[in-house]
Length: 204
Image (tube, rainbow, N blue to C red; front, side):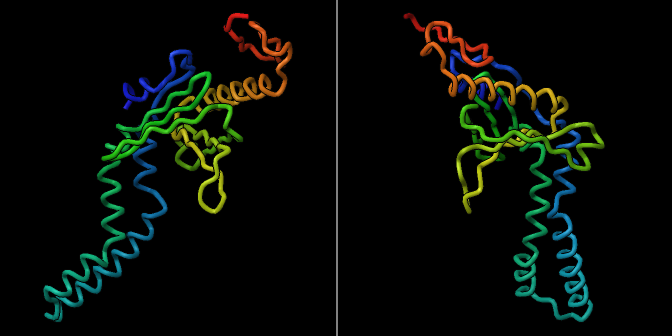
């Protein structure tokens, strides 16, 4: 979680922001996700059939096993709700002057890291519940391609100070990109790059 994620940060990095999602919004969005409608319709149909079979006395052990498997979309949705708090507990974000770090997972923890130099786009997203609770998501696209050649994203979701984090990451990424594209003075101890505050502390 937080302590383990902090241990991954380099000694020469400065933490610019760290935090977790808004708990209320995270739980509400976990309940009212797109899979809710599928699970609801699936459950209504299956339980209607089960009720009819029980009324007719034709329900046996074989049908019980069949419906236990056939109701899998319902079980998946319910298990997702049950483990919402655990997912929230393991979710943590850290932004440094060099990279973005995210810890996540339910039983197995994942630690995602992406240097700011490898980010391609930073966007804001605010769904219905985000607007209601005054929070937002910072959606970060990377240069890495995933399935179907779609860029891999890192999402910092449901945070209260979303505009501050968005501007912070955007500014840091622009500074690093400018410093890379315009390495004036061939990178001496102080790099007079393009509107950047970053310096090179190596000896001449």
